[in-house]
Image 1: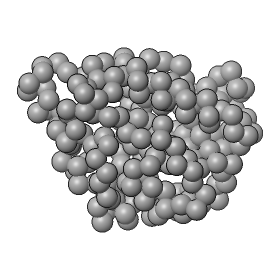
Image 2: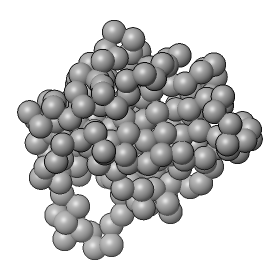
Image 3: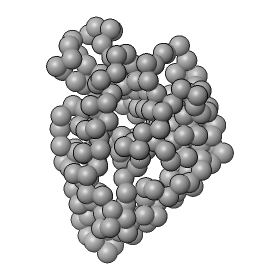
Image 4: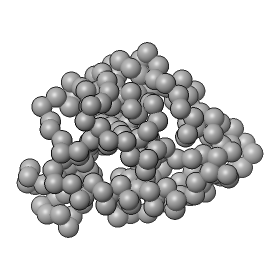
Length: 199
């Protein structure tokens, strides 16, 4: 594998109160917890020595703050397409609460009433992929868990409705999308790296 092909690094935001409780956190603009702030700072050490042609962040404060604490706040451009899934009526609810009312519900297949469908999220992800691929050089993105999972699927050309739920992603994790040998072969180079995070 050659090292001169561009890489898109994906940083998931640090911990919030609702990531601890398992509540779906779409557009609710929660701050990071103290531990979330600490682990976002640890991302700075993990990313040390890397240079980026562009840095993009979701407009939600959990992503923006993670970006700032990782040392890239001044370089970041806000990209509304990086916002987390709009969960509509399921905002703030846990998966088990939702499935108690709607057995067999799966976010990546069924979407959310009053929120986004999987196809709507995939369409946003496709726009991000196009934007990132137009950049000459490496890119760093700060976003949220479910959106990053859809983005990874779209990067490698698979349908998120079937596959995205299999891509577990921890808070303050780092992943990387890239290519094998040439630009016609997109791959996932790194997934859910949390070695920098203090548990």
